Image 1 (cartoon, helix red, strand yellow):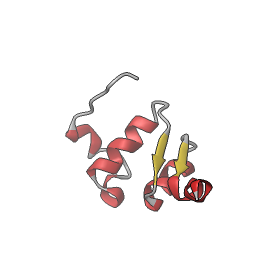
Image 2 (spheres, rainbow, N blue to C red):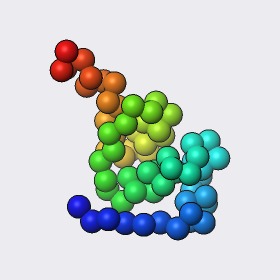
Image 3 (spheres, helix red, strand yellow):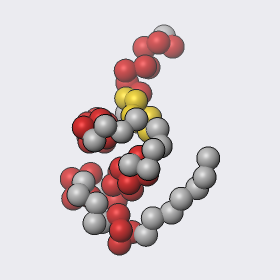
Image 4 (spheres, helix red, strand yellow):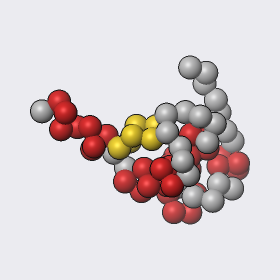
Length: 66
């Protein structure tokens, strides 16, 4: 996997920044470039799935190991 870096000034321009914060908005930007995201953060999951990104809610697969 290639490592990418977005400047904070670009991330704060992401439409989800005010609602999700800096870290999650950066994840949204990375996901828009085709990365799969696995998260237990419902707000982030809803945002990404609404955008058609590849996202898995960890809470949906957690019971499989029990």
